[in-house]
Image (cartoon, rainbow over all chains, first blue to last red; front, side, top):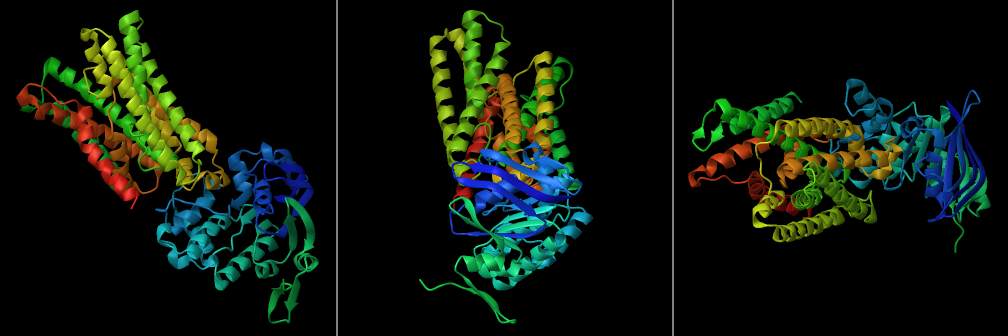
Length: 250
Length: 318
């Protein structure tokens, strides 16, 4: 089981991401920053779908064995790391069930929707609140429903030890966001490495855990979510019943 | 799935029967030498129809382009260009006729490389980016092939020039047994290789990025499919000339039966395309017998396929 991901001396051209050293441990890591700061590039490097121009990404497992990301075959990497890009696409003729089941293909190697696969897809869809949509083609879904079907593809394989999601909360309403946040927190609680970029700072608070603030292609702050937000001049208000982030008036 | 298998097998059986039985004197199973000749021509139709249809199914999935077909993309045109130049070399330089097949594969490879270059330039994984450039380069390659083959025809003696027309409008003939066997073996291997990429091609329909995240070796898959498509198209053109649209029509029909399973669609397209081309060849032979001639099957495919392409285009861009 992967317990750590280490990034060392990373440089990515032409986005100019620079990371001297970064270790991602089991649990939740929220990636924050403005548009164009380099969040997606960092997530692509962590997810193994973007090979850095320079530097190394390593996966450490519980027995202390280190594996270079570049040494993994695409399939072996996909079995260990379930990732989703910022603007995912899928064949519009796929049903929600088939789309979610695609997340099992790295491990199963085929699309056949057997009973076991259907059960897993349904369970994942229930977690995300889209079980009633399982038979619907993707082309008929709203933006938020489609986004949840894509996220379901990334979450369906429980055996993937690392989950990397780039802005999975975009297009989601409050209820759908709460369901997804709950699913991700539960995944992190099972000692999986969960790395998620978000723009909505209230969502970041809900996810909790560790935050990385990215600016200009570098990690400029690192720590517990609330601490990082407050160091960035934001105020976290929590009266026990309501919680939210207040921005300073400009 | 059982229904789809039955339909595919039915297509092959029906096409074979029509192709064997249709002749100038109407329908009836011939005997003796005529049966042997018809059988070899039917086998050629099955092999070529399978090759072009399987290639269409795989290319449509790889390029996420419903118009992808070896003819529309210019791969067949490139193969015809290579074959015609090689044929001219055979006539004028007295080199071995084996170079015709190599010329066809070389021409198909050059056209495939051009298509891929345009696809990559237009954005590769983007759904919008792949549709325009690839089809436009097909128009360019096909026009260029017509021009070059016509030029070569003019330069050759009249007695030799007639044969070059074959490369522009495909026609099924009576092949030699070795040529038929080589084509059959290559096509079967090619279809197996294309169908084996099915799971990866399903994921590639969501774009390169999502497929890569799901563990698909995107570049390797593309290389295998394009190489297979190039070889199959080259072989098909080398033995019959350019037969258009069959690789467009059959996969579209098959997808209605099988949905998104690309591996099954490649197999089903190969079987249905084999049967359809054999049947069309038989019907073309019988329909024009009254004038003492027969219509090349390439012309029949174009008569059916061109309007169908217009329909697909109209639906693709509402």
